[in-house]
Every structure is written in structure tokens, then in C-alpha cells.
Length: 292
Image (tube, rainbow, N blue to C red):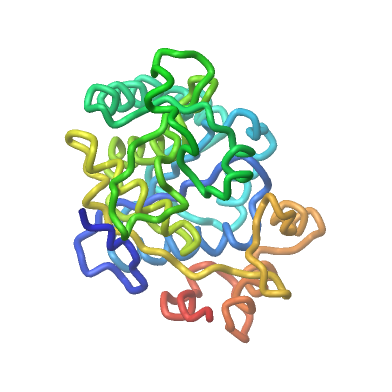
């Protein structure tokens, strides 16, 4: 199985659709804006259309204000997309992942029928104590049934040296019975016909896991998608920007009165561009990808 999903230059393959895939689990920051603009730039250069695909399956961290922030950010910076929800109401009524639960259940049933899943009682704390990054620390596959309640379902990942340890036997269904991110992302991209995935280099191992999963599903086109992994925007101390780490949000900066041009110029400075930027279309692909 080929896991060569690291791309650092414009796709030579024919691509027709890419996506923005934000999560309403926190306010967006400069790193999210960078990824949106790079996605839009690559789409413009390759002729691909853009889908807005909001990942809202994590209901514990979902907040209406974070959903609103996604639409506000796209409008504020005039970032284009050709498919997907136009408003929060449109998203909730037609585009939420809650409307695609049947598709996720079908994929889980297929994986189960193929013997590629097992139930696991190991918690994140158990793994940390055992020094595991992912997977099962015991014999859960022979101790529990997939019909037992309150257990994670894990996907049996390939036994290949090239497969990342951090993604070994990753979770595809959570203890509460809801489908997990990796499975939802693969099913969604296949269902919407996405064949260009643009994401940060920090998600390279996640891409490898998703490609492996797609190979296990019948008629899943995600396996043939082009993956482009971009460099990361960092703070002044060189740390990755993260919602969970409290990176200053675009929401806060806009509330302080920053204009689109001011924020785009700030982003440009983080990319090593030393001149003002008035619109996202002023960025070039080469400038966006020259971060070191």
C-alpha cells in the first residue's frame, strides 16, 4: 500500500475539487486563515472548485459562536467557495455531519463485515501510562465484542514499517457510539468528490491513516486524492498556532478593529513578505509556501 501523501508543490495531477474543512470547536486564528488562503490560491491556479465542509461531529466542543465565526471569517476576507452552506442556518438544516450519519454507519458496517474492527476498553490515560501513542495495550480484540456497550471501535491498521506509530489501530467509533473524525473525513471527502486535500504538515500522519482506511472501503475514491501538506504558521516564539493552545483568534483581532488588509499584512509578515497586502488574491503560491 502506497502512503506517499506528502506533496510540497503544485499538483501535477488533474484536480477538480478541494475544500475548506474547519471545525467549530474554537475561534479561527491566523494559521486557519493561512490554510484557507493557500487552498483558495491552489484552487485558482489549478482550476479546482472549493467546497466548504464543516466538521461538527465533535459535539462536546461544538459551540454556535464558533460556527458563526467560520462564516464571518470567510465573508470578512472575501474567501470564495462554490459548494457548501452559505449561512449558519443553511449549514444546520442541510450540511451538518449529523445529516450524514447513515453514510458513516454504512462505512462502519462494511469495515465490521470485513473483520477490520475490534472493540477496545483502553483509555487515553491507559495508553499514556503504558507509553503508547495509539492502539491497544492489552488483548481487547479477544476480550470484548463490538456489540458490547461503552467501548471504542478501532481499525486494524496495516502492519507496515512505513505506517506511523501514532496512528496505530486508530479509533473509528467512539465510546458513545458516534463515528470518529478519521472515518467521517474519509467518507465525506469521497461523498463530495474531493480529490485535492490541502492541510498542514502536522497532519501528515493523519493523511496516511485516512488513505489506509479508504483502501479498506469499497468504491471509496479518497485513496486516489492528492494530498498537499503546507508549512505551519507559528507565533513569535516559533510555536505552532493552535486553538487549544490559546492562539490569539481572528475574532479577537477583528473585534479590536483590525481591517482585512491589516490582518492579511500580519499574515504576510509571518510568511516572510515585507509589504502590505490588501486582498487575499495578492498572495502568490510561491510566497505562501516559502515559509521556513
